[in-house]
Image (cartoon, rainbow, N blue to C red; front, side, top):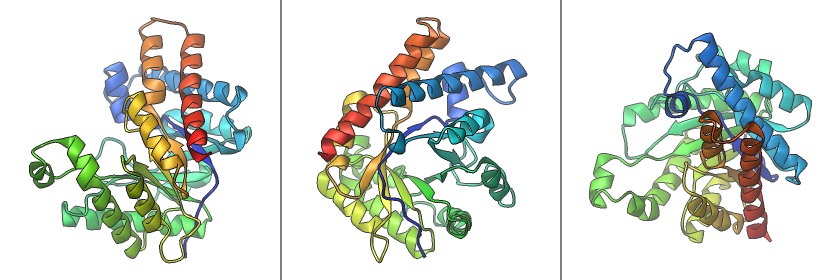
Length: 304
């Protein structure tokens, strides 16, 4: 059994945790109460940018946020109350191996408390990588997938395929060549392998590709064998505006790609500038809103 989602979906993700508190604030766990509140307030700032964008015309039916429960519980509550799409992260932050933030016995209780539209898992999975690692991850992911199907909760799977040393060596260490010529096939293989092992996302949240034929083939895998209502969205990977725009244009032109989830490229500069007191909160909110709306406009133009 599969559970799909194929309606337009424009996600502003800001569920970053370990990398966020280190990169943005130069902090590390455990945080003091004051430091914790500072991180929470910065995430509230991003959410305000999202609300500003919807007020300015981003279609509410497709507008969503992805935020963590740790720093974003109040945001999730507010978004749910006001009818926005919500996704919540289930993975332990800062780990190269997928495991549950609240344990294999605790993730369900947390999802039932938050009641998100989507349950999201970020996974680093290279089919030519560590086989034992992949098996351990797959067992946990199947547990999450089975739970989501049982509860009719769409599962959003964020697939990252980091290169192995051997794969990078074959392209002389050039990560751009890896992304262009090697990663797309590895993504397809990873998706097939996970599907065959009983992991059934409703949405594949994937790294952008530079060729339309690669986007088409990824949708074909996502929707194979009766999975025709499964959707794909493009993640931003912290890339610059031009690269993100290119990925969105390619994806938007391919049926089956329903939207995007672009986070750091949308909010990082605005939050950093606000924290450094280079500009005020209103200016930071306006900048986040502008960038998020930019991705919506780019994607919708590509669909047209």
